Length: 183
Image (tube, rainbow, N blue to C red):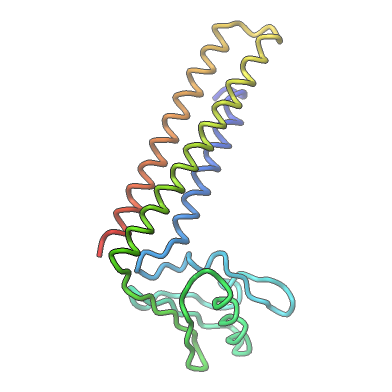
């Protein structure tokens, strides 16, 4: 791949990966340990990901279980989950913490799908902005004795790249929407 295009491919890839990560944190009625990815626990004064202070498992389709490596961390982990946007109240038996995910209502599912579509649209706008930046940069190359044909070729390749990422984003949106709407 041309060096001029590599920069824009990386930026578009990051946009896609960010959307994928965002979708991973959306609750779909099934327990997904990624909903805890953004939750940080106060571990002796240091904000630490839950996965680094305990074992996170999914023993049942709608339950996440966290077994802290130190029993003293149970209260800290519960506090971090309560303060996060996970939206589930943790319970513990003195050994493990359980998060039970309620079944999503039809209305909640539709709201989530709207949110998913909105995030996809924002990602597509970001990809198109990257394309615009690329095209602006390619126009400046004309001053550096790059032929018009080469610039046109770069712009065509950038457009193909943009189309590919927009299609990938749409695919990601479709699969996440389907996952949410599947009861």
